[in-house]
Image 1 (cartoon, rainbow, N blue to C red):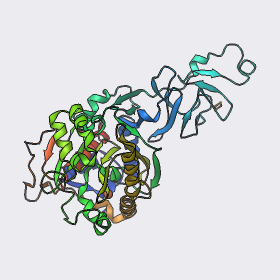
Image 2: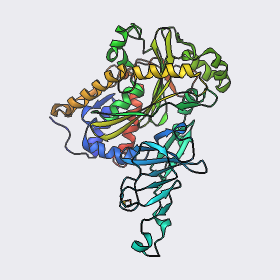
Image 3: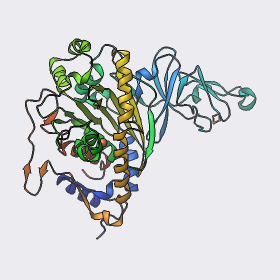
Image 4: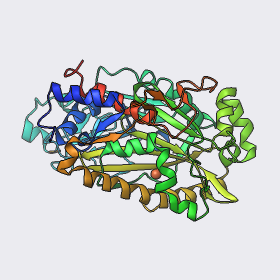
Length: 446
Ligand code: FES
Ligand SMILES: [Fe+2]
């Protein structure tokens, strides 16, 4: 009865057949062999979010980050360039910088004291001449740069693959939506505070899928917010709007309201900012922004964003929450969570928006705790033996039994991508799975 022995071509072919029927075999969620493939075939090859430009404003500013298991030192050099290095000393591999952030002229290794400048050059070796003689070529022992670092709308991404396509090509039509979120204001967005982070007993695919593709869970998982009177009681409230499927596994939900237009014009941002939004965006982008309550989506594999409206009636605020789901294993994920707000917003609005964020997302937020609980329980039950031949249901889109499509794309939607006229569909989840399968099965199944 148990189907999974070890990974081979046949298993991948079966997996493909199931996925084509809108089913996901449950064992793939937390399987250790799948996880090893994901590390090598996904995390070693895709663009991953490192931070926002506003986090390292001055020369010498740095933050330490991770790309899955790779430690990263992200710095602004003297000349103002942004560089990323492997945060590991080239001598014996100690983690070079152990602080989360700061400002420095040089980095000195805590083990034997080798030091490096902001460009990653090795500039100091303790007792160098005595220990290594005159001939040591320091230039050979600089920090190892991350193969690719590129920036879009202030978002800094890294890629471990020298052959990777440029970031803008990878993002494709997602740029149109990122422009709305990050480019609507003069001066762009800025990070406030430091990213919060915490560990959940969950698989990274489930957390990413939840955020990037699943408004359907909102009315049940976050039922308490309805009871508190801060979410509408209509069970379809998170389903109104469009789900936009983009290339490379990216996509987003654009949640409006039953009327097709949000009750919160321009997401509650002060009216004085509206002409600026309209100046910075195309008419189509401004129209989408003005009618939307929540933008929530993701860039494959593990970067997500949420631009909601939260608070209590009369005190509603908008902000931008960025997420990274950093895998720590098949059943453990480190969640990184940033708060951003328009640099041009009035200070008072920024402060109130930050309070709304802390009360909703972030480790102590009501919404966050609801989700974390569910993610951990999925992971826990998933390790059961009987799950090895059970499948999960992703076919509310195309009912494979009836061969019918529940939702046809809405051709009148003004943005790029394939837009379905509901946020309660599995189109986005299937799009993520499709990309995931393409990458992990490369070279195994054609
Ligand atoms: S490991 Fe860094 S100086 Fe030795
Ligand atoms: Fe949620």
